[in-house]
Image: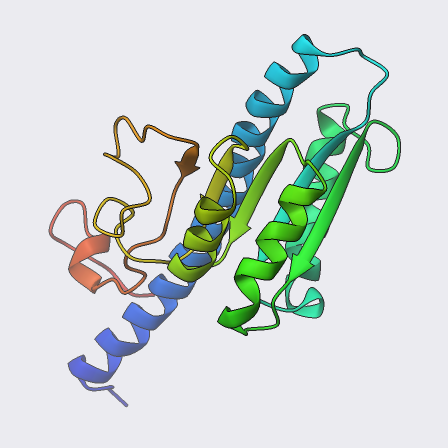
Length: 187
């Protein structure tokens, strides 16, 4: 029995989108860690080796929704020699999907004098962190508008200010986006 081409393409598109999103999120986490380690590394060189460094983590979601990502971050930091509770502390703040809590939580992280703020949320959360501090490095990860259009950075090549990172601008892909040679096959 044959499936219609439209149904087959739709299923293939959904499957490829899911695979791409999973791959993109893994790459995003490793990129985030690399950026965080560069920032923390610079701070480490400027201070004593016995000091515990703080990473502020501002999330748009809940702790339970972020648990898998948090564990991956802790393991990856551990591979670089940064062990939570020994030489780093990660201060987690979750807004539980409530955008109005973002400014308060960002301000709380700034009061703690974290060395870097990682923002896992959209434009509301990035803007809240930006309004809170001009000196603490902010690493944006996840969804959101074009960061240049939203005013978070001056340009993608040269962000300027204290905000860097990346956003996923579009997670919808078509079958043609996945085809390098113009041909695709389905098993």
